[in-house]
Image 1 (cartoon, rainbow, N blue to C red):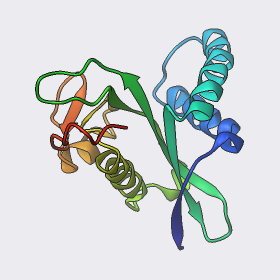
Image 2: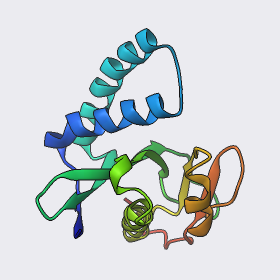
Image 3: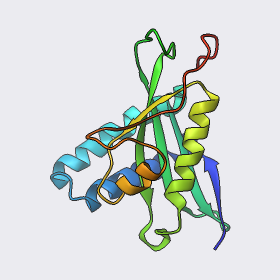
Image 4: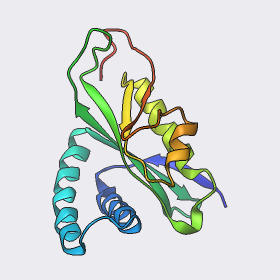
Length: 162
């Protein structure tokens, strides 16, 4: 089966929310009633950030256009420091692959696209919280193990800010 990557937009809000819900349900996270309230609140949070560009998302689609995997990046306000002047830190969210499409490297491809976008936009600090199943994928991409896995993509020039 062939796949292609595309960036997500505001029209994909429902798919991103669905992936997040499925991800948390699969890892057994939370009371269903709390999850339902959380989904509604998250949808409003996400709508605002998709509209202002502070959330970037990528999807893996089949040749027929069916979304089978996704990954997202939240650009968090972050104080500039003496080494890095970027006003944002990237935080990876919502990495999810439909069960029938797993073990084909789709999440790795999505993460490579996400990290390439970060490099191109001067975001060099990226973090995430990994599930047990996802941890080896992120380690293979260069993320350091820990409670919050991180990767440093390189320091950018002062004039190259997002």
